[in-house]
Amino acid sequence: MSGPLLSARGLTKRFGSRVACRDVSFDLWPGEVLGVVGESGSGKTTLLNCLAGRWQPDEGSVSYETAAMGTVDVHGLSEARRRLLARTEWGFVNQDAREGLRMSVSAGANIGERLMAIGARHYGDIRRTSGEWLDRVEIEADRLDDTPRTYSGGMRQRLQIARNLVSNPRLVFMDEPTGGLDVSVQARILDLLRSLVDRFHLSAVLVTHDLGVARLLTHRLMVMQGGVVVEEGLTDQVLDDPQHAYSQMLVASILPV
Amino acid sequence: MPDGAYNYAYLDEQTKRMIRRAILKAVAVPGYQVPFGGREMPLPYGWGTGGIQVTAAIIGHDDTLKVIDQGADDTTNAVSIRRFFARVANVATTTRTSEASIIQTRHRVPETPLSEGQILVFQVPIPEPLRMLEPRETETRTLHALAEYGVMQVSLYESVTRHGRIAKTYNYPVLVNGRYMMSPSPIPKFDNPKLDRNPALQLYGAGREKRIYAVPPYTSVKSLDFDDHPFEIETWSECCALCGSSESFLDEMIVDDSGKRLFVCSDTDYCEARRK
Image 1 (cartoon, rainbow over the protein chains, first blue to last red):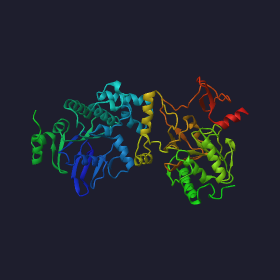
Image 2 (cartoon, rainbow over the protein chains, first blue to last red):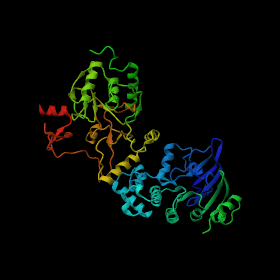
Image 3 (cartoon, each protein chain N blue to C red):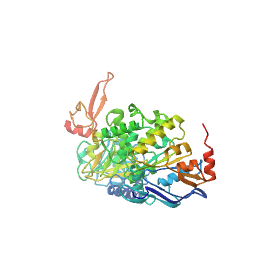
Image 4 (tube, each protein chain N blue to C red):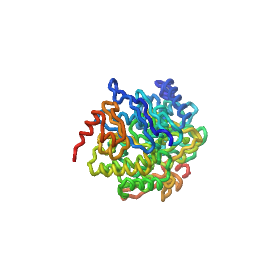
């Protein structure tokens, strides 16, 4: 086995004098799902955007092991290469599906966009692939030509997942993929994500404030508070035996059912 | 004689120089939209302010100008622009495609094949082909810079899904020289094949948005499509009622109150020449 798929070293991002995340370092190994948990404003989303190359960090670097071109410095790449990477080897699942989807075009076109962006020019083939992915994310085949506007929240989120996975990415960034959905819909999406991660051997960085989601999906966990990683370890270990006071408080805050 | 109150061809020399520089750049990078300092012209935006500035910058004493609007030489817009240049630039005007050295056009490419040395000037309302798909100018420029044109293909996919075919009939997107996505201005897609490897120079001027772009002679212009839904041009079941042409772009006209229809060539010069 080769080195880590993604490694961050000393990532710091400031907005003016406010520090959104400070000196974050970690390695993500192939096939691994890393969870980032913490309360609102703890810097989780900032970290994710820096990792995905959407924002330029003030200090530190992110390196990524590509399939074809060896290890690259994500922020040192030209914009063209970084965008190519983002639409072929990576996926990005937004919390709000409307940000990640084209709401005015059909589900089939949404799923097919990445294929067309990398040169697919056969309508029938694109449509067939879109149909297959719709089936994989458990949406009825007759909804292929409907726009996401007519979809429920859970279906939109599943469509967004399909749209990202159609190009067979190796790494998926997820920002609260189940935020704002009711619990039964959440459960189905978590179930789906777990089977997709398993089936396609995906690596993922998952940002969430929901420890239940983290427990179910992630292998390893980073707990963030005020932009700093306060605890890091295997998910079960962190959740069952939290060491840092903040992690203990976080675990203790889970509502018992 | 030219009207002494104006500089030759209406625009001052520095402005013409600036526009010529933009044109040279546009010709050097086929399909790329070059910004230029558009001037107020004595006609409203949407009537051809872009085309008229391009024409003013390239016209000279030896030129013969033809102006068409929807293919016709005798519509208000075409007549006024032709008279404008006859007055301010003292040039000969014509309605014959083969005799013109500069043809300013709105919505059509003449049926008569163009030859080397002729210049076709298009009036363009919206130069950005991605405008309806991506509202941010910064983003469309990035997409052009990186040649990321998947989103245009998405719009064609959507059209096939909704209508069973690519339903876009005018302003049909093209890829110029294998590089830049270009709006061919609102010409019918019937005219798209004429843009490809045309021996004449094509200049496109957008007055409101202040952009100039160009297709040099013999440059490839490819209309986008799918492998299983290839690009097709319009066809008619009728021939031109006046000249009998079955190869030209036909306008449908309703000629009486009972709804009687007539199909005639939209290119008046072509139609007249065939009737002689």
